[in-house]
Amino acid sequence: MEKWFLTRKGADFQEISRKFHISPILARLIRNRDIVGDEAIDLYLNGTIAELYDGILMKDMDVAVSILQEKIREGKDIRIIGDYDIDGINATYILMEGLREIGGNVSIDIPDRMKDGYGLNRNLIDRAFDDGVDTIVTCDNGIAAKEEIAYAKRLGMTVIVTDHHEVPYEETEEGMHYLLPLADAVVDPKREDCEYPFPNLCGAAVAYKLVETLFNVEGKDVEDIDYLMENVAIATVGDVMDLVGENRIFVKQGLEMLKRTQNLGLKALIECTGIQVDRLSAYHIGFVLGPCLNASGRLDTAKRAIELLCAKTKREADLLAGDLKALNDSRKDMTAQAVEEAVELVENTDIGKDRVLVIYLPKCHESLAGIVAGRIREKYYKPVFVLTEAEEGVKGSGRSIEAYHMYEEMNKCKDLFTKFGGHKLAAGLSLLSENVEKFRRQINENCRLTKEDLCEKVSIDMQLPLAYVNEMLVEELECLEPFGKGNPKPVFAERNVEIHQSKVLGKNRNVLKLLVSDAQGTKMEALYFGNVEQCLDTISEKNGRIHVTYYPDINEYMGRRTPQIIIQNYQ
Image 1 (cartoon, rainbow, N blue to C red):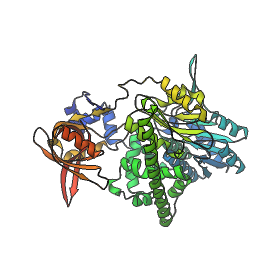
Image 2: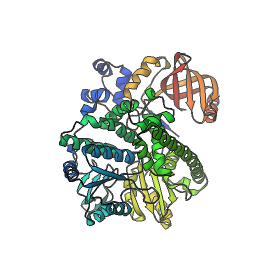
Image 3: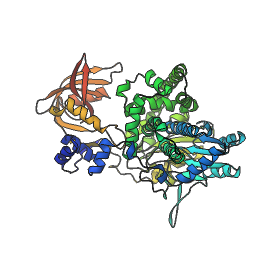
Image 4: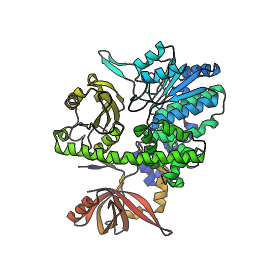
């Protein structure tokens, strides 16, 4: 059951409206997103790349840049080792492009999800060593590779870590003891001793900061690498970072660049997925382009996605984009099957009684575990781990809810894992098959979630009569974009909405078109996407009157533009 609540945050909305030339509605929405004070509001509405912080403020950034300058000058071989997801792919591309632009001898390597697993490992280090590589630069990984980096150092290699994940720690009597790898430089804004003002960057943004700082120190024109911001935007949205502060600026600017991108691969992918370029938004990165890039690392090799970004001809780009789209279509079918199996276990076994769901699907492709965990979390609003059979033991991914810090909770039973890492809301792990049931038991015994925590909360920005829904409002709401985690799409609500007509649309019968009116008698069309039968049953039970949350929209048909609402929740 959802719990709806109205957000009531106070401010002088008329004054904000006057000062920033926006409506009081927009002023209230901005306040609801905890944007307080003239400076913060101005940055939110008008922030540009000029407001981004200097990368040199990151701990060890000066050391990393100095090492790279020396290695490039000496003509040493530098290998970038990324990761196989959307953040790692874009971070790798950013470093490769940036270092080559400066004159570096650069090669790349990305772990194979099945053979190597996540992040830096001995195979990758041995491969680099055999190729005569002098310096390894990691991106979107490395912070948890203490032993692997020690091994590379024993082989006489220089190692620079760029990452954004939490620093591993152990709890001692004196408090938390952070376990930094003994690399030559460790650039990670999550370091406890890093004073960078905005620690919540993705791996690609950290990589961009490194390249940008290197350009500055070398006296090169940073504008030459501005185009890489589109890759930062893709990674920031794809890795589900909070769209606030620097992330918001990166995504806002990057989306504009993406609309006129010169990258043949990205152009081809936008074209073959049928995205209308002028309407390109964060949604398209998260749900269309991102999954295609991710599919390469899930079902094949992430190097295919790098090849797409590096495509030199339209023909090559079109072929690679088509391949990635086909891979993603195949991934969708496999995911649907695995989700069905997971639901079956939750509904029909004792697993469903647990507050933390640990679901073992041995036959599920291990690359899909995270997606399946996300779907199950959405359905049941509980933290979820999906485990699968791997080449060695069991691997898995977790997706969490707001009240449950997954990485901290996993730390409490870390003795059961051969490897683990992650954030508050997502994690990855490896363990022996005999520890699967122990893990399920222990993670639940340690769980302190209450009934209240497990009740999904729908935060409503304001109650808004339908008469306010017009073209001007819809246009003004675009000022709040890009929407995503940390900057959600506004949620409006209206009580006792009367349903006058209903019609089921779509080949899968998953769209409901309604004619509705509110208490003031304003009539309007509404659309609902989801479980149509359940919605119609509720409407019938409530004699055609329901409470709704909605988002205003404009319906364009045969040259006519009419206001409509998109219903998100109903009661």
